[in-house]
Length: 332
Ligand SMILES: C[S@@+](CC[C@H](N)C(=O)[O-])C[C@H]1O[C@@H](n2cnc3c(N)ncnc32)[C@H](O)[C@@H]1O
Image 1 (cartoon, helix red, strand yellow):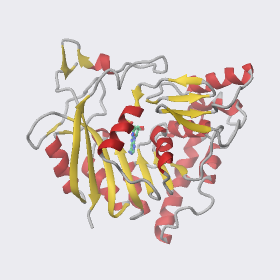
Image 2 (cartoon, helix red, strand yellow; image 1 turned 180 degrees about the vertical axis):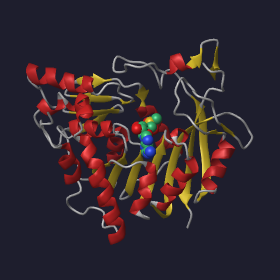
Image 3 (cartoon, rainbow, N blue to C red; image 1 turned 90 degrees about the vertical axis):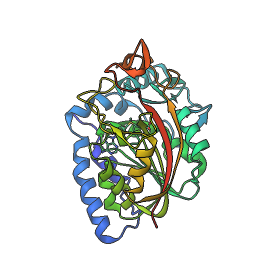
Image 4 (tube, rainbow, N blue to C red; image 1 turned 135 degrees about the horizontal axis):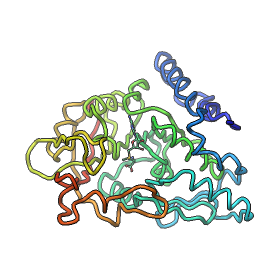
């Protein structure tokens, strides 16, 4: 039985008009929110919240960053019962893809060292976050959104069409609430409903998972102010030509990989979807330092996806992915 109305928790974030969208956009956004919200209370989501709902609200301001770890409840000493329920709540949310996090002293070493990606993004793309209206599209468990707070945005909206990720937000808010953060159960293709709104968009780790990548980029462009900055990170393939790999049924053992561009193809895709001043910052091979199996991950990780004899190839024999970091600006 649902003891918390998660639909209400989600909608209440938006009770006060924080966006001041034009009326037509505001109505469409509100209608989509309303229909998405009803999914949160569905019984299949119980696995994500069954322990979290038993936790008290510990504090609303206990948050900090320590050596790249997003820490909640550093100043707390929960009693043994609360600590047991907290550990249960964290285990309910396995597999932890992004991190690291720490909750009242329990360290969650996620599959991805997202602190490494964040450091690269800040060094390479150097986005100016201060005072901006920011979207983190495909925000997963919100790791980067908490990192953005250090740079004083006016608003950061995390977009995730996957209900599960709302429950990480729900858990985090037992420790920390910040009016600059909000969660939207929208996918990239829904964002155009906002109209030109965002000053800065992070679109990391999503493009190659989209069946229609150009449509995704066009919808992002529609959600951005002219001149707004897009920071994009995507998987791609090596090569000096203008092509994309379109794998067969699986790539790295998963079916959700569609178009993997070379850096030149990525530049072309951006330029043909409403962006200009495209800069490819870097393309890196993935390492086992950055993506690996930990005790917080129940599935396989990078070491099982690459050919053990040739780490330059996936187990299917395709070129192993590069991670491409790029910037572009919404065309004026
Ligand atoms: C590989 S993860 C990347 C997470 C994070 N942005 C990062 O770079 O580490 C892809 C994320 O995109 C989310 N996603 C799935 N469909 C999406 C959509 N239509 N629009 C936006 N995000 C989506 C997934 O739920 C997942 O959290």
